[in-house]
Length: 384
Image (cartoon, rainbow, N blue to C red; front, side, top):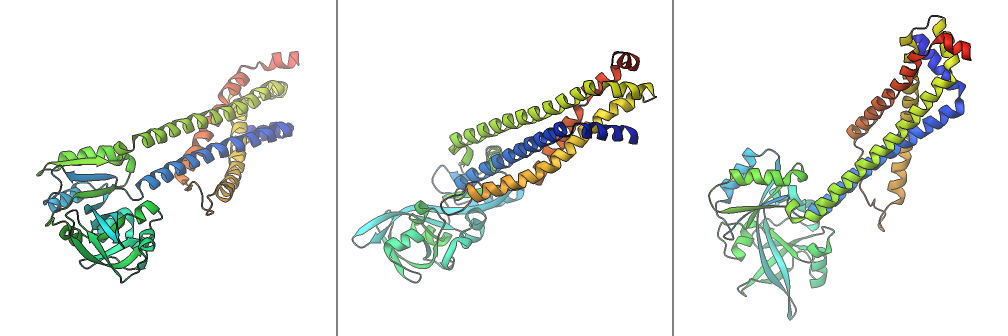
């Protein structure tokens, strides 16, 4: 098989400019295709992370308001659904906080910090103080603390829905990077929130996070069928953000269409080059066949050409890809110099894209090889 390889190599070198243009086209096509795919994945993850940064994937709640048998249901979810990575009971209630002669509406959130960290990563967001461990200890958001003019160690007065005043101690300040949440959420442990509204041992909801957020609707249905006892209802982020989900799916479809046509255009350029080679080199091929080169060996020449063009083009494309990614991360940024889209290098996706293109490009040699086999060496030499 060495002879067909040597012939293929010489055929490519004989038309250096044409060969270089095809290689450059392959490199651009493959690198742009992979780059678009990575940007699409990054955009999807960025949008989902922004929507779900401080929202559960699935919420379990009682139709009657709160439910007391939540420990049993939480344990059942943990044991039966390995795709659920966080189970966090919560107590949420509206309240007011005093600011001089005014009262500001806030949301008191009672949580188990250990469980909730898997959802909201509260501990990492505390920039001063510590998590609320004892009863009547609370965390305040950065903007709310600045608005009230308070610091760690101070006390604040909260008004319940029944207009009763409860004094809480500030043990920490957090910053989620979302002003609306920082201005609204007051975070405590479960017991504090339960006592605040006289809820006993009940919770208002169980918030869940799963491995793949896009499976939230399916997992939600499975959990709904598995739970029993009190009348429970489930909601998931996909049902609550249908417009966003539709946008993401549409963006995925458009990306696939663009990637397909980029690959198609690149493959067509290889087919054209190999087909032209058949006609340009028909005399040489005819002479080689007359000298004993078999039809199989003659056809393999064009498969080797496709392979060489593809491998060199793919190698160059990976260099282009690095340049594209670095340029994107350097120039497509926010005012804080952070990337607009967080692009993750998905080696599996890159490998699959390269392999798909390699198989498709080598397959383009079938038509030129068939034309080569049909060449009659006597006729070619006679008419040359």
